[in-house]
Length: 376
Image (cartoon, one colour):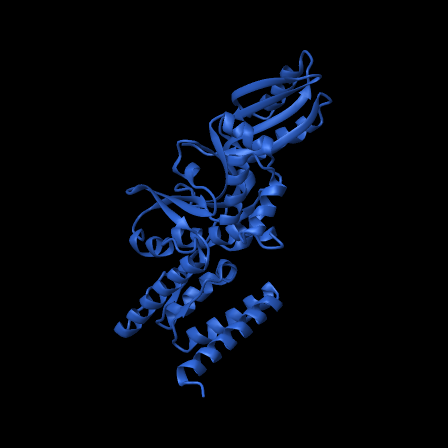
């Protein structure tokens, strides 16, 4: 006859398998709907909640934080962002009095693995993705990762906590890595940069506007984020008093996530025993700066006809839209040539207008990826 401990183990395994099955068969919307009902019920009953559901928090976090606060209980979610890296607790506690100006980082291990393989081994995107799927880093349908939606949800949560405003997933601009080519990676490397998919949350001190976006970026080789490889995550926090801080580690996986969950459970238990809870305070309505109003430096590669006057025609389009060129290089390729430009800081809308007009030039055969550049 089975002992009591053996029966408990069998029952636990059964319940876990049933839960896995229900999560696999339910749609994302169904899971989020079920989760929010459970969380609201628990908080309303005065029970603390620990969750790692980033999509739910990215869309309903502010309301749930308010509900938790009004009922005097914790809503903790360290595992929702950057896996086992202790990021949320420092932002909500250690840096609560720090005027944070920017949080920027590698928030998705799948895309970082793919880009690392393309950088280190010269693999193309398709082959690197297949390898990531084989190793279990990428899902069979990798859209959420490679198109930036996973990182976008995390960036929304980070922006809300860092700036004390309500930012939802729909406020985040997304641009993935599926159009990044081996040629783009090689050009970046030759110029002293590494391509990374970054989540960036910034607040303009003068206007209070918040810009939150996810897109590939060229990171200078000397920047700490450039050395973050494979499936690791890293987040760079910039503040007025502390300067720059970087949090680094495994951003996903069972053990790192379990570590984050356990830390939250202990925190919730201690607070409950002391009759207290952690409060995030009230979230103001965010004034979101759209992507067209943001500014950056940009890299743009063009394949053009190799004939007199082409460079003048191309640079004339940049000048017409007020986009200043910081550096340029040209490579001959038979009847065609490749022009590579890095701009000075320019407004996104002006750069996009430049690209649209360049497409209309007869001498331009192909426009490569437009990749933003971050400073050292």
